[in-house]
Image 1 (cartoon, helix red, strand yellow):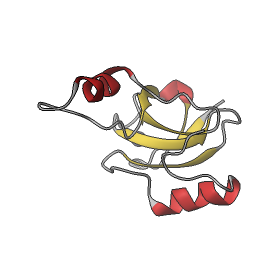
Image 2: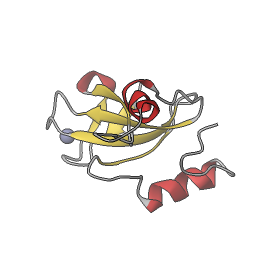
Image 3: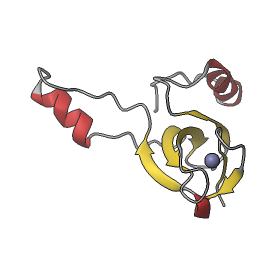
Image 4: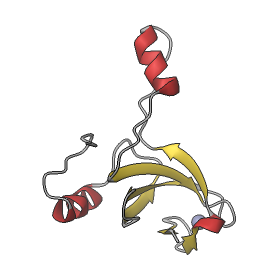
Length: 109
Ligand SMILES: [Zn+2]
């Protein structure tokens, strides 16, 4: 069972308390963007086997959205953090790099 720590209320919530919200850190394109950029914003998502960043909502708790860094193949959770960020905190990136040598941000393969 997937258990994620809510960074707002401090609860270690299992997945029955949470609602998945898809990929985190999706770059948004607005007016003036190309068709390809807007298409990527609407439809293109990563689906890695390994390190992934996701949006989750503590639906049956505080109700707030947060981000989680985890491995999709092992369910190992590297950390959770505020959704009010444009990229993962350095401490989470360092933790992932220590466990997955060669990994780098935005390199999902
Ligand atoms: Zn919460």
